Length: 288
Image (cartoon, rainbow, N blue to C red):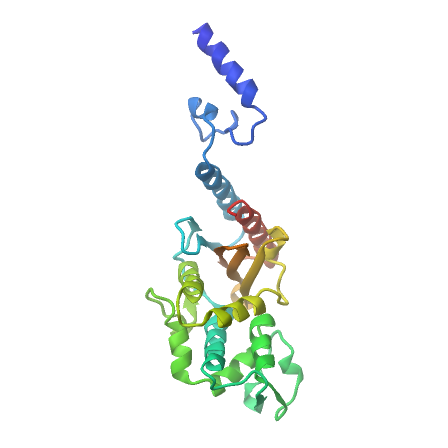
């Protein structure tokens, strides 16, 4: 018995500063497990559980979905919780707009008139213009994806074929009412983003344009805040202050690796949401 204690003590002091060995103070781990070196998977799982623990301490309801594109790596929490999607709705609209360019039905420099009924409050620059003004098609697309402009969405509702818009929402391959009533789960948004990248609805050129437009926006203070600088995050946000709902969903990219990251919420505060998204971003760093 004395020999066993001496052996365990030696192991502990040898590994006490090793971050890949469980702490002896971890109350959720048995005594003997505390001396077993962690595998990469167990490290990731433990880190994610810590994120979830901190998330549960925040106000409101959160849903988190993280998945490696074309891979098996996945971490999720409340991933099938239904949320009002708010401006996440603009992602399929943007995809439909790009498809029309791809088909040659629209041109980037084509002039589009803004009609009076299309103006709508919210973020973005188009609401500062006036009825009858003409702007380029690509400017509308930038306002939609980079500024989350509601007026831009209304313009596309008028000028895009309805079948093209519906086809873009149908990129989601699991049952959803996203198109009908803008309610969606983190899993469904994750499915949409992954299928855009791995599917053939858009060409590789259009996919690259989409990712570039979504990588630099007016709202790069959420998941971005926790990500390392070398990781690109092509994303779309959603705000619905009436229900204290805030979302940030996109694709984190480093070299050839791509990971879907989606954080959705309701009945929370923006400050708590920023804390959770920063935490999630810091966790995503270790997945690359």
